[in-house]
Image (cartoon, rainbow, N blue to C red):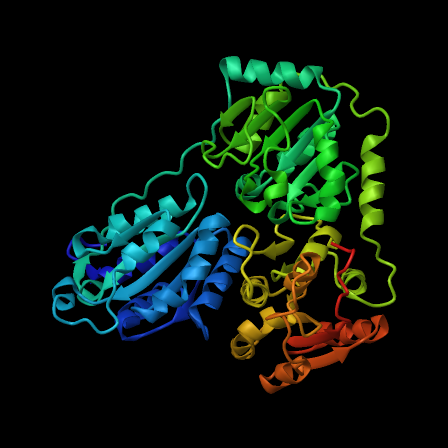
Length: 540
């Protein structure tokens, strides 16, 4: 490349994202981002036209889960950016490296032209790791900073505002060397010796694993460590599958189900060593606040950043890489017998009995039928609602990222776009999404995007014409029924109307037939599962 070669500033951003492994960008363009869209396409990054920026953000998250490259959300000025705020905040809380590219008018123009103009950096600053306004002279540097910041430590969203004239500005094509990724760190010295002493003397250890461990791909290290020292493993919902859930030491996911937590919390409180590995309690509900006293219980916390959440405290805090820390911790310790009275198998049995799969029909029967009749490596996505709590306890994950959801922010309407982004980036995998009927109605317009992309996810909808989880809480508080009921709609017909297949089912046999048809269909499929109101009572 000649020192005299020039490119547009927007090209500098696009090329850096391509070099980071990005191959898709998601959003809805406006006049202010046309140069950017052109630059992305020229760099080899396909622009996926979505119907709403919020859905685009979740599709971008799904692309990251499948490729390991940052997701890209493109939004035009004003309402475009504001439409994406929920998915950006979700990326911040769920630790998703999302590059948010927005159009804006030039600074001089904004002094006298106010139509759709607002301070987008000020809006996004609290829900991103960093926000930049692109300048032509620093375009290469800003692009590299955005990628590095998004991926380092706890991943998260980074925003770049692109003024119209800056995007078109000609700059040198020669870019500086990108910043090298930081090497993995591990504990040493007195902290490591203390941790090893505690491990060597523990007879009732338990491991709680979360988002940091998933983002650091620590599953193999966790499996090896847990197996070697016979330590049972509890995961957050988003970290399900880091230890394969058929493993005898896997106790599944935790955090949202009072039914499951009634078994898991007392078990943790009976432990003599709690080893938190990349565990971020942002996924947990109040019942997990201060479930141990770090002054009397030995708790080791291995995290990517210091604890500022105060949901719990630890006796020993280690700011380091999860896998490297486990390797160091286990290097000089001889395994010994743990949980010698059969407590682990007893707990697994009681958890299984708490979520029976043998009902004739209902939400548990739907989940069980789908798991039985879809391939073992199926990737599932879950919307927020009562079905998600049940699904996260019952759905068996054989690998990380086998069940995708909005775990920290718990936003509705995420399952369908997460499934679409997954199907686009993992075309050889079966993908199924689980939505309540209210969440599905929020996002149904994206079915047209699924048809346009020619992808084939299976969209399962739990149809009870109610905000089931909110209605259940309403009844538990003995409040009047209000603002939770709506009409029962023909979701299968919606699927067909947008160019897909559609089935309405009310039995296991009908659902099995619909799943078989969906796996051989040449388009997406909507399966509307009709269930009775109150079907989740006593189950979650």
